[in-house]
Image (cartoon, rainbow, N blue to C red; front, side, top):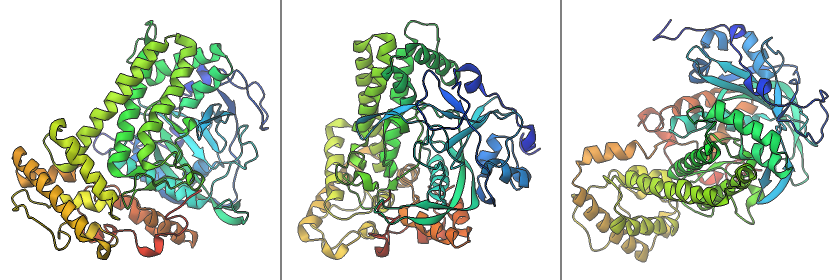
Length: 535
């Protein structure tokens, strides 16, 4: 026992499995790809693999399940979370849901390569759903194989945990296990497939419900199943609401809107781009879910998307994320409208619980990033807008710029012109030699305004820097860093996965021994697959 933590044996985990016990399931027990009606899930077993090997696990997530290092390093742990062994109290299933993909209704989608093992109740009474990604086909796999490759699995494992330590709501990652098998993938969808090592990630979350779970039943006019799912969601994920109240659904929708607003504000704060914000990838719990072709904004560019499928329309680019959040919530509102019939009320919630909450949250975020006591609309709207325009007009690393901005002193005398980039900010520029006099003058004018604004706040410099460094991370999972870890892992060396996993546990700390990760994207990564583009 350590600090109140009492480790449990893996085989002694307590499963509740409320999802399958309280919701209607698929009556066809076969694992055939098909349309599934009037059911929230289909039962399915993971597909065993030939040579599972544990590459990494998260001790923090293990503790959420009351598991210690001994349990995580056991052979049983590897067998269970590779999908080879199903514990007696587990009840594996794949969820049935639909969704809008790139703005178009796609109909039934479902867990095509995710299998939920069950719901664990830990010793503190918390519910955690365990889900394997890449453990074989389900009834919803359509023409796919339900498998995952090491490349995408490393990215999911590292980013899930990185986001958590950045303070961003997210699903978690318990383990990363290779399967010992090869999987055929066409990485760029260009007709040149190749074999890649297979892997399985165990995701952990209080809930994996998505907007699309509700949309599917509404689209089919299956109000009975929709109402049953709503009742379950209120009882399980929103227990603080009175499910019997006439306005229970609008109250729940308002909370979903607020959570989504805060979530996307967090993404914008650190430069995270989800890459595929379809409604089936939006969590009703306000969590970052489904780490597919995500990316981190390196040069500040509001039009950037990491998703090759989205290059033409850039629907899911960095700058569009707040608007897409609203669009997706509108689709969820349409689903709830089939139950409530309260169009005006739902629209009011979209305006108040999403638009206004996001705006307020974003203003507070920018005040924090700039080291201001609070956001003053009379001065700070222009201050922020001008800065973001400046960042866009030269290739400027977002993470480095905001982190080093804390070193700019309000006591420095305002200048009339710059002859070179300020020493505090110079490292943030990818092509400093391309900076012209006009840009330098514009930057100087902004710095003059910024210094005057800081002087008006009269905040101690050390306190300001401390506050800024708590909101502006020093280390994020840059795209090239993840690719380097993937390359080494594919050669049989997981050491960089472990190093990055540990680095990203403390993204706001200086970590001087790891300063090499606080640098701009190297030039070799500018157009490299996996660093600048993903499918």
